[in-house]
Image (tube, rainbow, N blue to C red; front, side, top):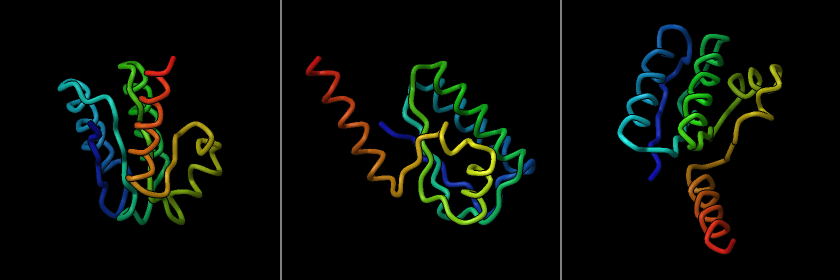
Length: 111
């Protein structure tokens, strides 16, 4: 199962807490696969980036996967300039992340 979050317009100090609360709640209820869909995000600042890093650490600590998708313009530039685009799993679409999960599950079964 994948829990998808859809930040709206701006990922900054005013919205980052809600995202982290959502990720924490998802993990507490047993969801290990988290997707953050940036389709509606127009702007992300360093606080937003920090929230993503904290979420990633939380998810990894719980042995889950966190991915980002539909990054555009400025939000991707923040990740790229910080080098974090190499740390996060980034997909074009939610379906691409779902396929990746299925591929990983198939690989686990064949080992």
